Image 1 (cartoon, rainbow, N blue to C red):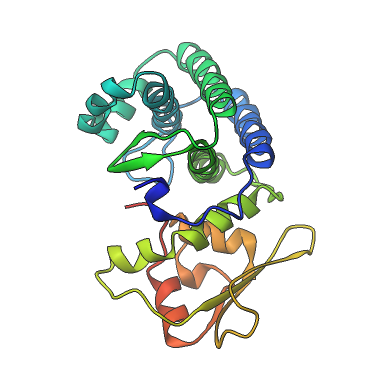
Image 2: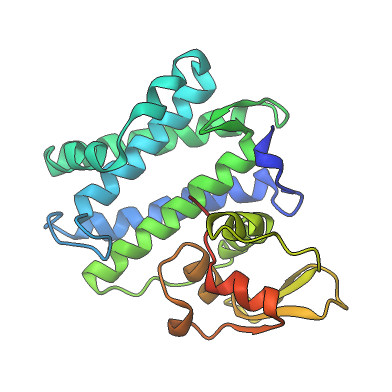
Length: 250
């Protein structure tokens, strides 16, 4: 199954790819200014070094999946915590240099391949469109952990639209993970972007609705905030259940 059967029509690679690069640069500026990568982040047991090592390892796996798909099966056996710990133990300057080179290589690979070219990715077949959106989501979410750790504001940008679109497309994952049936009734999602624009998904006349800021929605679907810590509002039982169980990864 390509792209896990998700409707990615709301995500354009030519827009999302530069945003991925920009998100990485913003995070780079923060971690480059932080000398102590042993500082703990909100992710239990993970320091700043763990977070950067995880991002670097995932970027490397993207390159492997595209360029040597026959070897990607080995990546499925990796333990994310162990890989992050191993990377965090490396010298800070070395890990930073590798992360910079790796994220640039991953972006270049994803920008070069045809949009219809499939490659393996954790139980399914991915495409450049999905992979770019996933890398942006992960960079932003793990970046949020680091911003929280160092006490720096994670300024919201219009890049959140790609993450929100991915979260809407992956709604079924929230119900699947909670072992709940996928609702058949449509849900309208209306999110306010950082510049005041309202981004919408789903039928305008849907009875079930979710409203709030794009930042809060992205924080919720990446499980960086509980529902009570956001200003999100839901109308309808299915919409409420979605937000209560919201996630964008297993």
